[in-house]
Length: 488
Image (cartoon, rainbow, N blue to C red; front, side, top):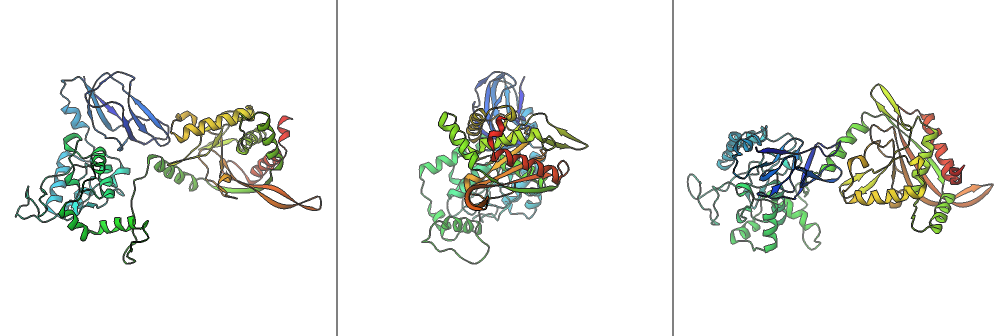
């Protein structure tokens, strides 16, 4: 019996996934538990496993496209099984086949109602008008997520045909304009950026759909534009002028018009960036932040780090590793800070699980050092280094970057002296660490130079009061300025 393959929930904060790569193709045999695809979640790239055995009969979501949780993305069944009913169920609830047909017919005929039809199908904020080579592009609206719907084609003025009805008739360029194009959003964007006429591309996807690999093939072939396309080049449409103005920005020899709106380009947000945006909205607004800043003399900490690495070069301890250890020890002395807000209760944790912010290509991720208060500095250093490497290659598992009780964000290595960080709910605090900078200070009546580092703690006032946060920072400062106290 044929079964539907749906977009699974692969991480706790995942709301949609982007199909990174199919490990199987249509017609391949699959078994229960066998990986069939790689999916980009909000934080990592993870394998999706088959929940039934059979033949991969149909792939409904192409590589590079996104789908919300629970959306049907493929069908597994026996080789000769009728899957027409399942294919009909795979349609997006927001759009029926009849509605889609009316939209396409309206666009072809240039009716004013096309925009209204599309508005009923595409979510608010995901509608845009786009033309490539002066011709309307009709994207496959059903089954795409809001992040890629922004690249869908909206109604545009069709090119007049030489015949009264215009259906199936050739234009002056010799192309057929009555035939509908089915284009994936990613392929449409790639074609627009590369200046490829979609009507010159043969689709290899289901139903002749033009997909990413078709555009890549057209780009690699180095196909020259036709005479009609060169004519369009001389009289580009408004969207083309914007695109070319952006491209011209990197070429100082070309002149950019200073009239009209500024040039721009739209890019769909990655799943990770969407998640960051969504979570921060639920943090900085609802969470009542306050901030505490202090300066710490780091000379002794730097000397301890140097001594550790000289005794065992393989440890490769960093200043940030020392900060993680000291923060964990301080949390054990101030359990009111090692807490989180949960509606009508405050949860206090009995160990320090420290989240360490790591910058990656699409945003940031916070691998968690579990029980950092009980681990030696060398073990913390090795663990942070190993998890940071896997974080940058998107190989962390959800349990490795969720559930921290306190977080640290260090921008000192980028030359940032001081900043404030946004709390990651439900945690009650986060520590923003700046750079170590040599500064003149007064010690015992004399001016001396010391390595000074500024740190700012963001606190959730529902959990932490000002005096509570201040006492935590006093302990943190004392231990970091005298790291040998960790041995006491």
